[in-house]
Image 1: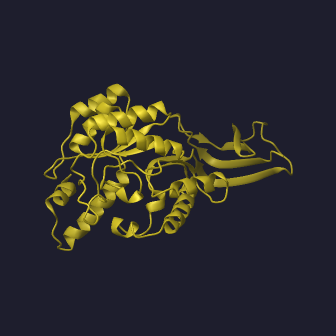
Image 2: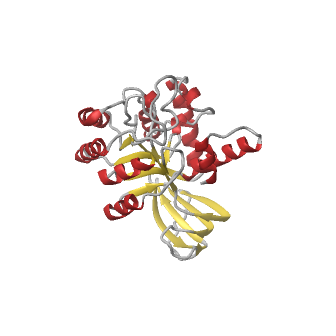
Image 3: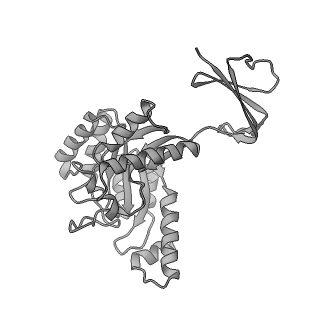
Length: 307
């Protein structure tokens, strides 16, 4: 039986850009929105099979979308701690974070990288109704060079065009929703003695990125790329990566620039930019506190604070 739920609120923002609507009534049939109407127009179902939800004084709006998140890595420590935690802990963190996100109004998320098949398990649990969470699209293990950013995700390192293509095929076989590529280094590349590229250094070159994009598209997957270094943004744009994340434009000396040509290419090709603003604000707060406490900052940290 398709039971009706009638939701009343003070106003509604529908996301199309029109003015907010006062006194909306949203009629839900089963698990689908059946009708959006105004109070008193005679099209609202009544009866004992109708559940009434009165959000008096509240504003209702469509669910939010988060295009860059690491649900299973959101515990309470940095990379040095994350790599020591078990897959079971990562999955429990993912369950807790997915539920928190849903209850905060986020109804769709793109998980941008997890260890082993932990994100696959989380997605399955949500789809089966075992745990609460948003609609989840996963990248699974992100593609990285040997010793590169997120190398700890296991069985995800590839060097050169041939290895990149093979790894893309493996990820698709494992049923990822999209492909995540570490086009530059990052905070986890230098854990231990691996000595991987820093955030100011390129990881994959343009040819490797293009091969990843071409193979992903051939197999029906879009691509996203972690781009912190200056040159990685241009490489990813020319290679046609669908979504460029971060775009830090970090130069080798730790300062930041801006590649107008790369941005022009992105616009011409219709590529998307995911700014991940939260990571920038968190880093600013952390570095500000560090400076206020009299701790010394590295050159790159000083430049980040000024930027």
